[in-house]
Figure 1: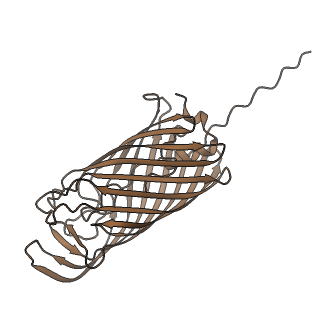
Figure 2: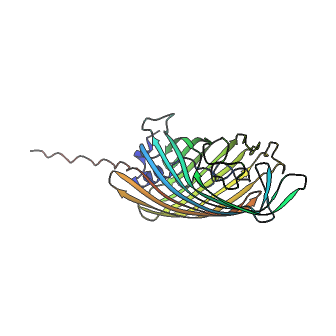
Figure 3: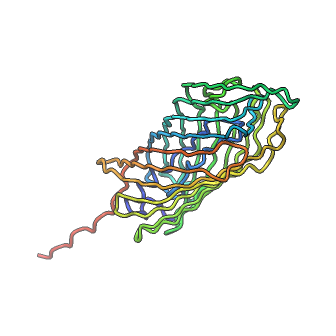
Length: 335
């Protein structure tokens, strides 16, 4: 297996480095929303990159609504008509190892976040016995998210690239079981999966797909455990130039086992969502480093037992510049 950063064109290696960042958190829990933030893995998800340190800053905004007649469990109660608008900034640092591991390229990263979560509900039911409390409530919370480590290994075989990963949640973020606007999720989680990328540097076409499963630990504050989740992220792009790409992105999420715990008063409460939208990216040469700016958005549909809406990601990332192919030595002149 060759070292992929030697087989890729420089612009492809840069994109791979800058998009291969650590997992990002969901902005709430219970309520049908999982640890995995759908859309975080997209184009170039499985392509190896240039060894060394990488960094990324991501602004994430979403507008979600569950509708006035939709019941959402949270903290042992049932909330009606949940609306949420998170504005978060994610900070990521990842180190890509030069020494091969199992014939591939390993990386280890960590992501944190801070920002504001605004939320409102139109009513609250206190339990399963029919003692409903009507009215409305709104909150806004500024704080920090949990910490999210990720370990990846990537392999390259010509135009085919493969990836496996494991990530998780360290629950240290801003969380209050009585709040409707949390940034931390209140419990630990572990997620593992893999991905594939087709990348043809000659034609400029690329397609990526990544999938995984999340196991959630119990939220001890609310006595609630989300079920096992399955998620798929995908992205497709076309390099119009060596620096500019355009394309599409999408995701699908499905809960495959039931929520449990004494607070799981709505039964199985398995949730589902899908989303899709456009993306555009641009590589910024910066000497010995490379910058990358990406804008993508998703419109959600096919929701079940969770809010739906839209979300936008604006990413700026930096990584070591891909090494240029060594030129041939000049011919010797005989005297």
